[in-house]
Image (cartoon, rainbow over all chains, first blue to last red):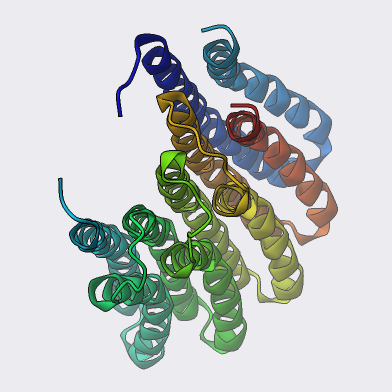
Length: 82
Length: 323
């Protein structure tokens, strides 16, 4: 099977997009889950502070999400622009 | 190069080696963890050793089941004779081996955690042995579900007829199908183990909350399973979606990338959501009156952790359908 230049580039771009989003989903998943768990633990200790604790959890999770967004952007770039 | 029959045999042996190699990791780790906590429990209360050992063996048997699934698939790959001379069967064998082998890692380790927690819980509350054992059995059994997805995809890959699938890019579809379910099952298996472990500890600490805890544990376990289901879905699409012949490398790489993307993408959210469920069950055991608030918080947190799993699924579906 003879592989031409542009075809090879496109093929590697597809592979790169898959690996980028795939591996990129690992970190935020683990980190945001850890944040959610600790928030549940804290609310268990002080239920009257539930609003503040949930808000803090969401802000922290949004920051942890950022690298996941970078991976998504790179994956979409590789799929549609390269 | 090599003739078709030799290629099929070659890849079958490779697949069987991969399957048993990966499949042996998880169950051994999980069972070792169980044994460790069991000895710790017996050291605390030596007169309970009979009950603890019984529970340890039951829990280890459940953790072993993932490795037994892998052994079954390995033996099938070693000894079955392919009836058609389709080279795709070679790639199907490799995909099937990867699917079962990788999927057994998470479930094996995960099922060991609640068994260990049950052993510790029994010496703490010998009177509530029944409730603790029930929670452990429910939790460990649901923990095995990702390994069962892996086994289903393995059997589909090994036993289906590929007469209407083209070789290029069919080979990539079958390999991708194996990777998608296999990798995606690792995280949820592990995460479910965390959740079940803390749920069983919670029942041991506070047996009156047993029913509520089992309910919340099942909710948390189902949510953590979702990324394994996404991987399973992508595998089924790769196997059954009609693929047109395409000799370009881009088409093949797109299908493998779809498998890798939803495969790897299932690992993180599974672990994270499992940890969230574990801490929620722990908190509910300490404060049973806050069960609604804690369940709500847990679900909100798990939903946010799910988001990157959804991105991975979307990119996979794009790779499958657009390219």
